[in-house]
Image (cartoon, rainbow, N blue to C red; front, side, top):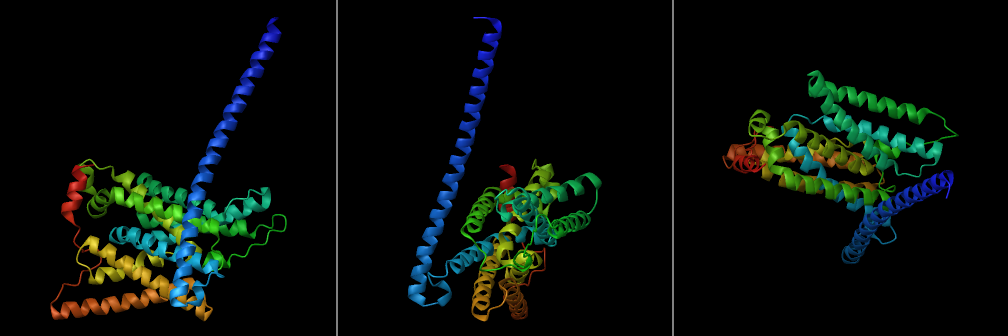
Length: 361
């Protein structure tokens, strides 16, 4: 066999092997994606079954099996009621309450990127998925700007917020092939647009957020209240700061479905602010804030459905009303001497648990 023929045969075999490997990798990734999405759809089916029973027992019209979108909206709301205060408790005590606003505006830019790509090249990707990616990148930029320029956190957040919203509005304004985008659902949230796909994305984010906090709670707690001591004890402060802002980005995108860009940050702050008025430890503050958030979400969704108003605004108004009640309860406790009303950032830090987590890090 001549050398040219041998070389051609070798090249053909190499190309065939590379193509087979690429197809196998693509098939493997597609198989994993289908498996994960199938599991999420199974969870969603079980939720439908549970809501059907709830409708049968309570007779609530908004849980009627004909209104699957409302059943999905309730699921998303309940997940947000856990995720937002879980992360927000750390943010409030680190004086990073406004980071939710910054990431919400960059998440809007992510939605605009997804809509733009779908219109231009027919990418077929969910805008909420691109919002997750863009928001997480923005979260890392906030930390990067703070670390490399010695700027205060509010400066880096202001830069990222303005850049993200400017990018989003620019992409939305471009008339690419007759692009017409209704942005109200992303700005103010909507119960009727919670699709099975977006609900599946929310469930995946919920699992990642709760699992990460459960595994790193003690380290995050130590970094939250004493970065210097945490660094001395061997904890990578910058790493855990990045983890926290990335988790915040996930929460923002998840809550954006029903809260909208403008109001999403409220769920990170208001329930936590109410919980600090009546709680005496960090753990108790997390539990109380989750309870208050769930109450605000359920009442807000109910009022929005039966009253025909925007869900995000009602949820925030209910949350603020609950906060006012919590302040009143805290003042009564202080007057009666039953408990000392904690100030923002002065809750006991569960120091024993934090120290133990630091030593085990």
